[in-house]
Amino acid sequence: MDEELQAIRQARLAQLQAEHGSAPSNIASGPSSNQQQQEVQDEMRQNLLSQILEHPARDRLRRIALVRKDRAEAVEELLLRMAKTGQISHKISEPELIELLEKISGEVSKRNETKIVINRRVQDDEDDWDL
Image (cartoon, rainbow, N blue to C red; front, side, top):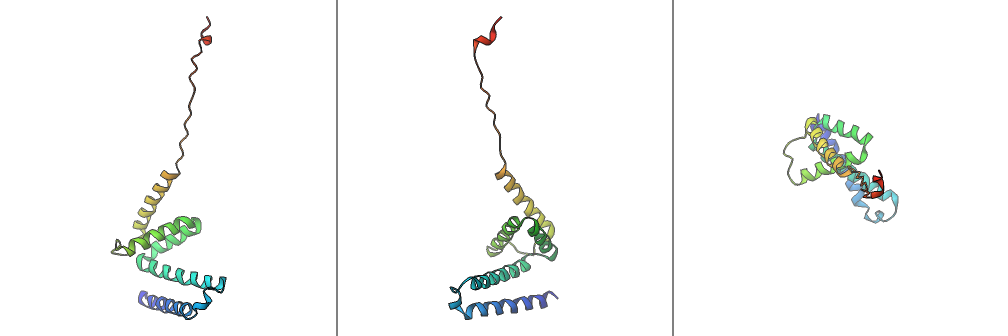
């Protein structure tokens, strides 16, 4: 089943690349070519993520993208970077993805933490000591 799906994805990716590569003059033609280029990049990205993540982990990442698109994109970028540098030797499971999300969440909360400091002036006024 996965091999068939992989073959379909590879064929679709080759088709998109052929369409994109066969018309280089259309790249500067306008927004439709930018949209095609974006579709090709998204297809390649999804293909790589399907190779990196197990199915439950991909589902969780999609659900996260519905709520926090920026966080999901950051996790995807991190996973793709780790895969390109060879830091991933197996498919990432859902618990491993959760652990990665917790690490990222902790880093984000530390950066966004605000600290309120109240400086109270000490008035050393001798008039307050009237007896």
